[in-house]
Image (cartoon, rainbow, N blue to C red):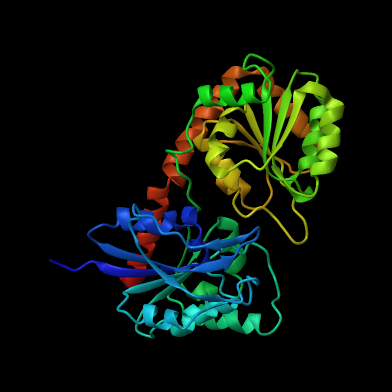
Length: 380
């Protein structure tokens, strides 16, 4: 019997339990063909707070912990010396979920034995000129790699024009969503509405989920809501620097607006199910455009009709399952939102199409299988 191939996947993101879903799902769908080891930091300074690795007994992949040095800087951090031993332990392929222009990405490429193919993943969807030494790190990683995964079609198209990328096999694979955790459950949504002091039978709820920052289009959505003549309620869930102005606006709107912060990820499915329409009006800036739109995929999985802008990767994420609108056109947004609020049939149609897209495109087993298929094509 042919032995399973051994995959080592390295990522500082694996310090977070939810982010190890990729490694665990690759182990599940690849059972018998692949043995998967996830290499993660024992400890990492996260964006909001320090994080300690906490493996769970139910994980399908093997978890190997290493030190992370200088982890306050996403660009400068390095893995500890244990990484060399992990990568030299007989892998058939090494997967690096680290950007190729950062120190950790170059470290993984340098320490992977030359006989072992290396595939890296990237989410860089903006053209950037990196200063030394980051430009040199990127060129080294690309030249050392046997292929690369783009977490978006716009990522892939952006990078194909950079030196070396077009000479390596590449595949666009989206991020995954747990379609069992995120699924339609209107009863749970109605319970959340009652917690807010609302009844389920009131006007349709327009929802926003994400950071309260200008580039996410919070201000556009506020302007659009003020233009509507159709009755509505609005639920803003997230947090960020625009929270004070958003709360002041909500107070002027009276009982029909709620602003909620500090919602744990486990309750996000219930929050989404409380919405009749999810709006994601992301706005492109010189330094940012939407890389994926996780809230869209989660909304689709919950069967929530989606209105979204055409910023960055969003048209590829939404496909024909959501209504994609010009990102800065208030009139187009007002017309589309009015149409959805007034048409339960149209909302039901988008709900069904969104759920189907989530299950067939973004479900973790689908995403994991695409990764393994690409790795197998690299190995030949």
